[in-house]
Length: 115
Length: 114
Image (tube, rainbow over all chains, first blue to last red; front, side, top):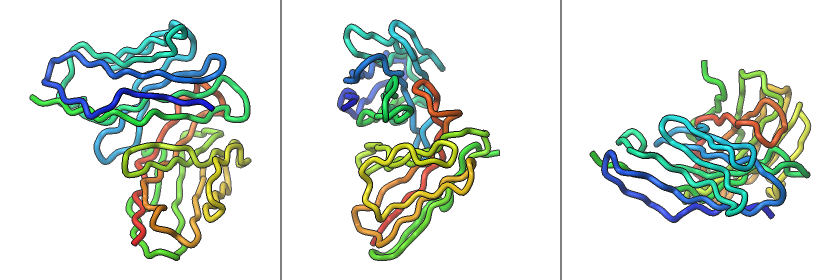
């Protein structure tokens, strides 16, 4: 079945440091790929997404590129802020089939940014 | 003007009890979901409904019964609660049942079974 693997956390950075959170997936065809963020005590919100190979999603300084050849969707930000401290989830949604529309999540990566 | 709302936010109850969690979305979406987040933050889908019709049922114990009275509501009823049911339950919605659609999540309901 479909699966998503994220780099182990937690990740602790100083403000203005460069961030990379690795995400790889296993799925048939061309799934849609997402990064969701969960701030403390809140629900998840979409950070960015890409629906086809080589697409780049971007939002709030975060970027991720859909790489079919490496089945990856790594999240990057050039300069993190304290307000970026949250849990980040990589997820995929299949291209079709009986699980159409279902999100499969990675295990989440806790990011803490210190001033 | 909350897009996806859930009640209650916190639910503490004894083993063996029956409880319900309600979810409402005011986005006009056709599709709604329930997810369970365990203590390690792992998220797993439980159910999805499209236009009030059950689409996905992910091998959830039949003590869990979703009910969708209309497209804007998807409630979750849990019978005979067990310790292992303690988790945060998230409701979500999306415009329609499609792979690339963004899902919009509610704030979550933290269920604690004692």
